[in-house]
Amino acid sequence: MRSVLIGASFGALALVLGSQAARADVIDGAWCLDTGRRMIIDGPNIVTPVGTRTKGDYSRHYFQYVVPAGDPGAGQTISMQLLNEETVRVHESGADVIWHRCGPSVS
Image (cartoon, rainbow, N blue to C red):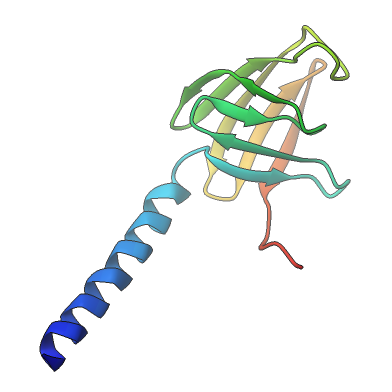
């Protein structure tokens, strides 16, 4: 019985670590600027820096969306490219801005 529990524990640990490693090489996740702006990408879904939920064109290392009505810059196309596990280049308003993965939430 003990060996079954140990095996199950290692299996669960491998699953958790494996899912984190797999997610690190994708654009999905929470992205932050030091100005306090934040956005969240989850597949083709995004929560924009002002909190609007919308959809865009998604691939593992690239995301693009049109800023929805009501958000600043409505109608503008925003494109993003994953540079490495911790940084993404966001092209908006004719300029590139580097965003970083958000740290853990603090409550």
